[in-house]
Image (tube, rainbow, N blue to C red):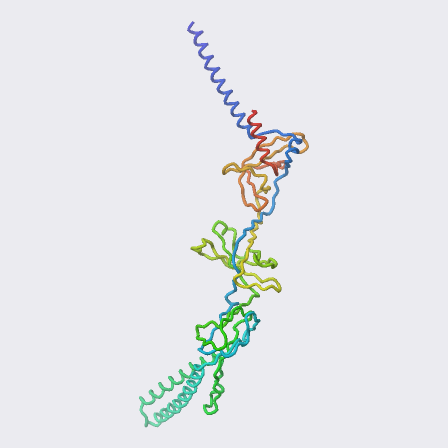
Length: 391
């Protein structure tokens, strides 16, 4: 009796354990098979789903940025006078093309007249001090002069010579020759100074008129050379890794019907603007042939970022299924034309991407016959869920 009870007891335990293992096996099979499904090629044709091998291709990422045209520092000029004077004549108008050294206007100046008078006085004093210095040297040589008188004459000569040179430098800066001032009796004193263009370019601003009294702080004209310009474009920190020095940039003029031109990233700012929270990138470019591009114009910059060494496979963006933070593709190793395809859902990681394609990285190697669904993956996901529910 006792042996019979033990037999029934262990038999019951064995049956319970066996049922549990069968249940786990069923659940495991269902979990594994939930990522698998089999569809006929006619079904795929009805769903308009096409399979193709993942290809290796160059990924091009376009970054679209906004900015403004600016002139290069050495190709723009703010013209002013080195001496106060009244505008006497103006030889250009806004929009005029000027060459370096070309007269823009003249200023009549009382200060200029006084400066020339001061130079002639300094020159005369230098001549007199030279004679006195030579005389003191001769006295010392003959032992009849005092050393202190020689030192005084020498100091006065040096002071006069320094003043003469200083005044001459000022006149040279104003473009006034001292040749006509050498003879005080026949001196040709000039009463006007000519303002010349410091660069080649266009006159874009002429804020003065005849009769205006101009000081050294007065802006007489603004000139810009538009043969070479640069665009100041604004990049946010999320895209800054896609921009680098020497990169090619396409410049599109937003409000102008002008051809797109190509430029080059010259420099990237190393600070973030506290107001716009953007980083300034400077791109040099040449204006389209025959077009007038001026500072202040709005532009859109397209930064072309090419990844030449693609190590992963690329598939269309339409082939990706996203579930929260995970990405999947549907693939098969079944040969096309076999009638039915065993399709499986694979988890992948994404790499670089552009407007149409993305790189996919598989956890394991794939076979040469492996193909991926290129489109309508939402329909495949619906079929997979339905097949999982039936199982």
